Each structure stands twice: as C-alpha cells, then as structure tokens.
Amino acid sequence: MRVLWTLDIGNQMSPFLTPRPKPASGNKNSNYYYAVSSLDMGISDEEWERLQKALDWPGPDKEINQLNLSTSPVHSTFSIVGLKNSYKVGDNISIIITARDHNNNMKRYGGDFFKAKLFHSNLKASVYGEVLDHCNGTYSVVLLMPWEGQAQVFVRLEHSSEVVQILKKYRESSFPRSHYNGHFEGPGPENTRISEVVECNLKWGGDGSWSKGNCCCEYEDIKMRTVWQCERPKKLSCDKLVHHSMGGFKSPLNAFENQLFTKELTNVAISGEKINLNVLSNTAGNGTMERCRSGLTTLVPAGFYLKDVWKSFICNTQQFNSTQMANCLKNKIIYLLGDSTTRQWFEYLERNVPGLTRMDLHTPRTGGPLMAVEMKNNIIVHWKPHGVPLRFYKMLITDLHHIANEIDEIAGDPHAVVVFTIFAHRVFHPITFYIHEVAKIRQSVVALLSRAPQTTVIIKSGNTAGRKNIFQSDWLTMQLNTVMREMFRDVHGIIYLDVWQMTSCHYLHENIHPGPVIVANEVNLFLSYVCPI
Image 1: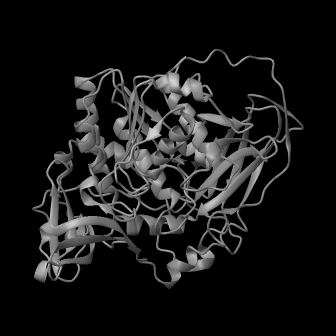
Image 2: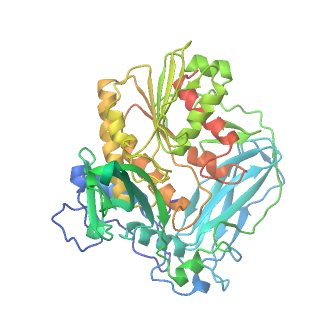
Image 3: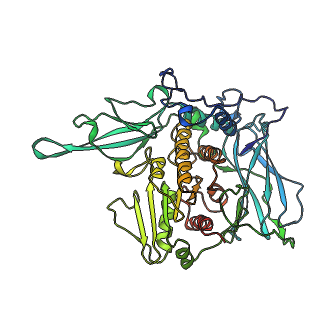
C-alpha cells in the first residue's frame, strides 16, 4: 500500500523510523543495540533514509486502548466512483474506501491494511489493486479491467491501523516470538550415545535479543557476521550441535491486543457495491509485448488471471508443456535457494519435466537439500533451504547455509540460473536483521554477476499467507518485499518476480503454499525469463 501525504489530515502519528544500527559500542540495554552497524552492511546514510521512507507506514497519533476506537470491518465501506452500466477492456475504475470505527465514526488517520482486487470466479479471473492511503481515514484504489465478461470488486480489511502499530512494536522489540530447537549429540559413558535438546535463537537486537537458562553456546557466521545462540547443554559441549528444528511460538500480546487480533476483526471483507460489472470487448490492441529479460520495471498490476492462466503486463510470457520445459532447461543448472515455496517449484519441475529424477541424497524429503537430474538434456536442479532462523522439521545444521554463502560458491555462466527467496521465515525477527541479510546477499549477487555476467539471477518475492496474526502477518511480508525491491532496484542483471500479486489476487483461498494452479503459473513465469521468446 502506498501512502499519499496531504496537508489537511487531522491527527497523524509521526513517521515510524527504525533506528539505524549502531556498532557494538552502543548501549547493550537498549532495544536497538546491534552487533553489526549499517556501515558494516554496506548501506550508506542515503540508502538507509530511502529504506525508511519506503517502509514508513502511518497510524494513530496516540496509543489506542479501547476496542471501539479501532477500525471496524463491519462499518467500513467501499464505493465505486462514477459507476457505469458497462465498461470496455482496458478501462480503469476508481474505488474509495472509507474506514470507520466500531461507533461508526469515520477514522481521522490512516494506516489500515486493506487489500483489493477485481475478480470473477466463473471466469477464473482476477487482478490485483494497489491501495493508496490518504492518511485521513480514506483510501483509494484504481482497478484495471483486463478481461471481457463480468467482474466484481472485492475489498477486505486484513488489519486495522491499530493492529499494524502492534505488529511494528513487536517486530522491532527484543521479544522472541519464534523459538527453535538445537539437537546435541555426543559420546556418553560406557560407549553410549547421549542427546540433548535445548532452545536456540538469533542473537540480534536489544540486550543480545535472547537468552535462556544456562546461556549460551554461540555460533558465528564469519561472512554474515551474525550469531546463532543455543542454551548450553547440561552434559554435552557446544561443538556437539548436530541437528536443527523448529520450536514453538510465544505470543507477546496482552489481553487488549489479543482482542484486536480476533478473527472477527482480521481479514474480513467490507461491504460495498458488490455487483457484477459488465466489461465489453475492446478492438484497440494492447501492442506487442517485449521479450522477458532483466531490467524490466515491475508494474501494478503486473498481470492478471483469466481461465486460471496468468497473463503478464510486463513481458511476453508463455505456457510451457513438458517437452518445452525440457528444451528450455537443456544444459542448465538451476539453483533454487530459500524456503518451501521454492521447494514447490522444485517439486513442480520434478513432476513435469520428462525424465527429471530426484537423486537420493539421504536428506529429509521436505527439508532437503534436494537434487534432480535429467541425463538426456543434461539438466540439473538443486533446491537448498536458507540458513537459520528456519522453521523446518529436524535436519542437519551443516545443511543450512545462508543464501549469500551459497551464491559465493556458484561459479556462474550462461548455463547457471539462480533463484532465491527469503521472506516467510524472516517475519519473526527484527527488520534490521533482514536488511543486514539482504545487504549481504546483494554483495554476493553483485560479485557473481561481476565474475559471470551471463548468469541468470531471479528474486522470487514473498507469497501472501494463510495466517494473519502476530506471527506471520502479510503486512510483515509486504514490508520485507519492500526492502528487497528497494535494495536491488539499482543492481543490473537481476530479475524480480512479483508473485505477491499472483498469490494476493487469486480467487482461491490464500495459503503460504499456493495451490497447483498458482505454482504452475509462477513456474511458467520463471521459465519465460529463462527462455524468452
């Protein structure tokens, strides 16, 4: 959601600015103590300010402690400006959203997290709409009408501005919402093996961010300059850490904050003119799409679904059958790095590329690392999970490498295709840690493209998710998407795939792991860049 600042907006909260990370000589009792400064990250003052501006999100000018003063999905409404009997393909319609509280009073400040789309289930069609915040309780959306037939406007309140303030607060605090397990194994008495499981977490932020019990074993990544901490085992030494796995969640919310997150107030459709709009054909052509390549601007909307097929507005995409996939990937080495959403791409290719066979690497089937090969066309596909923090089932800690480190190990050439995503598992931790990690990945990508400029490098944005809570809100993911786009916007030779729009506007239920239809369209979009026409 973009923000439009106006002169007459009533009460408005001061812009939220994440403090710039300071070197380790800062106050260790502060919530904003960091072991790594922004200068160490390779981020200038100008870039830091640009990031803060991009991330800024308006909200209440004071703390709200009454539920009835928060935004109500029941009383908030949308209306279509200048509603007509019919439209033509290519027309735009304007939507005005009015936010009201539970007393039916209009809100006087912005910051609500609305989502909007145009869709029609029978046509299996949908298109994303960007919400513009006027910071005075009103919002506007311009929706493109890209298909012939009928269409409906759909608007939902995912989070009130009051909830967004809570998300901000706990994202930047040192309260660990997500915990992890470290599995230690080693020799015991009389030739036995003993094991211990302890809590682990990222060391970052205020007062070291996390400490527990007999603290701590510390594991520093030399390149990343980050530290992973584990509670010290009672019997085994720190060098006996063998496996990593997800732990539990811990909510920081108090009773009032929990009320604001209830399902009755979260991700709820708001009322408005939910009528079928008639869209007529348009003889005016759209022009010729250019071939898919790096350097193209991500548009809003970036494309639309029709009959469950994604049609890009950015470049000439295509639908690949199995034979075409094999021809496209011939003599290619594909490196899919990240989380389970890129693993879905691996599994899709495994199912659809003839002869592509998974090798037995004696690793967990869903945890990886995974590799598949096809000998006839010399195709190799790797999938590797990114480093900790990571909410996966039990797996070897030695198999978890930060993406920057993985990219450093890739020689690169015209046959190499690198795809990475790092969003879903980072929403539990301070955004400064994410900025630091992206800065390190950027350094590695720049180095890769310097030594092998013909390497294809693709960033897959984060997906929208099924969960809309303090742990995994789409607002948090959207902010990470903003960081990634901003930090790579001046890096030549990379391709940014905005699958956020593809997962946000689809008529099916949102899920962090999209259904087969969406995954198929994501992979076809990816292949359209690998083998442009």
